[in-house]
Image 1 (spheres, rainbow, N blue to C red):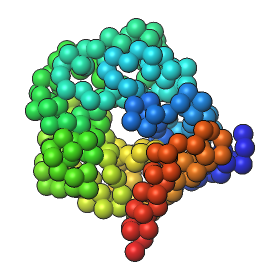
Image 2 (tube, rainbow, N blue to C red; image 1 turned 135 degrees about the vertical axis):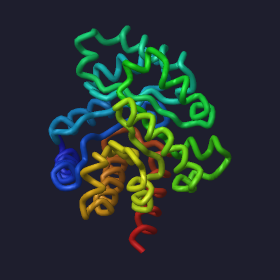
Image 3 (spheres, helix red, strand yellow; image 1 turned 90 degrees about the vertical axis):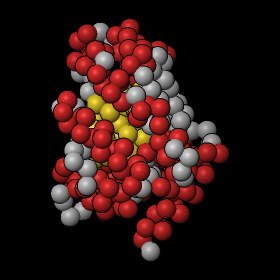
Image 4 (spheres, helix red, strand yellow; image 1 turned 45 degrees about the vertical axis):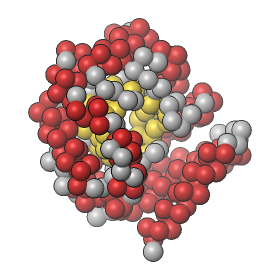
Length: 262
């Protein structure tokens, strides 16, 4: 463990103890997390007492599921779910990779992030295989782009109404409902207005919604989550191969962070 790891563990322990953070996350999908990075993150998560979530590359991404298993992730997220068949593919894939006993210790989530997925929500949540799924993550960024509105309109009334519908469905089924996508302090009223919400997430940090939103430090927690991601990206440049998209992400986060503080 190097000084960068020690600093990140200190930040994560603070987020857990004071800001109701329950996990950190990585993506084999859009973020392009490498196995070396995933192994580093899972160690940091374990030493911080947090869950570790990995979003795989697709509903049937067997290789990604094996990598998630090796990395020690205890939350697996499948992206771009748009049908009952995609749910079946994901559930079957997890049964191929994980034993029945291992599956008991996993949380399986699916991303609803397109207009097509929303229009087929009833089909998705009522299919038999959805019983094996622990909940839904609403990806507001992709959803907004699917609706041909900008990713900066994630707090719009249109996205809110879609979120509210999913929220009610997950409440009925007593499953998890997590919202992500362009999460910053401006997202807090959106979250507080949800009839049912178990979590919300930035790119790297997962919050317990009820505890976080009922505290007086929700905004501060989100700012610290953004700071953590910037620290992770900068530290990656020291230890791993520098990537152009990481530099761009740092610039985007710095701009967002400064804008929020104004």
